[in-house]
Length: 453
Image (cartoon, rainbow, N blue to C red; front, side):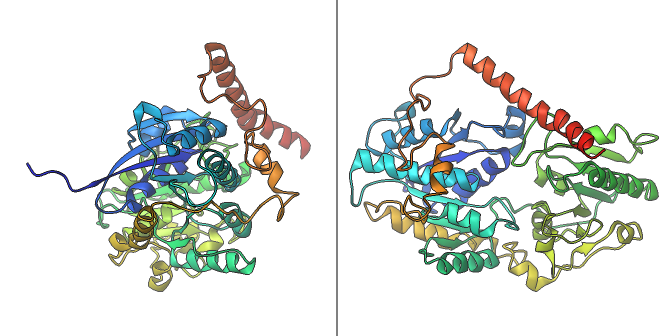
């Protein structure tokens, strides 16, 4: 057989939740140069939202290796790999590092990586990985804050033309280099085009923190149950992100599972709570309903009828203001009466949805930029907008949360990258994480209700 002409590409993805692991790992595969044979190593940043085995299985993305690390452990691993020392399993240096994290963690990693590479490889152009970051979905809050915390990566991915324009405007508006902004699309779009199903299936895509209050979440659940009772010929599914006790990107204080246990008369026979891969749920969906979930964009990509609810208002705090102009806004009263929305094609085309068939080329620009950077033989130092000089009252606190000093160096007492936690430490860590989640989902709501008396 002829020898393979593909080039080996070693990629590291650092993620801090199930959703960001999904985005980071899928993005790595989408933006890798077309002739690459990818080895993907996954690193899960230790914290309150570190995904469980069940959540990782549900995401459905496989990696060649996957382990949990602290920020300092990850930085030291990247430094060892880049200086030519053999990393995990005798692997060579990484070509690409994808930071799929909250903004503050991205900023800490950029400074930490810069310090490690500077100390180990020296100043000037060095052979280091291309660093990529971005957002997991719709950007509807903290636009400037989140963007400036991500500044300094070689590529800052924008999931749509609209986001690319907004990102560029923010960077240029503060005098920062905007050349890193690269338009792509959401990496998890795909699946078969919509065809009607029997029975007709309505899916409500729940979100962990939108809305937040027990009152609003109970209202939405009651309306979904009412819809099932009004339409006994339909199958009505409540698509859940996590089970009680698990955390996702956002904290869920009022799990729908708990609220469903209190529905008067119980749940109707045609109503079910479901988990699993969103794409598989969409395979049987005739109407997708949500407040502002990114699942709406997945649904629109397949041309499935999609509704963004207005029952609780169209508000920035809910994120559904992002869908103004989409043609998808509607209320439960309208849905109960049989309304099916018709999306605005111009709006859809600006959201990275690529329902017109252009999805396969949406990542070409990123692939070309990465191939060019990899071909240079050396890259200059990372240069984040925030430095001890430009943000002396902000940056040190962000770095300290990840055990890094103002220059990006590990602080004294930072976790040792060469030691796995012992059995006692592992037990204590699991207990602490469990106590935190119990406090969020059980104790905090009770205290809040007492405060309202």
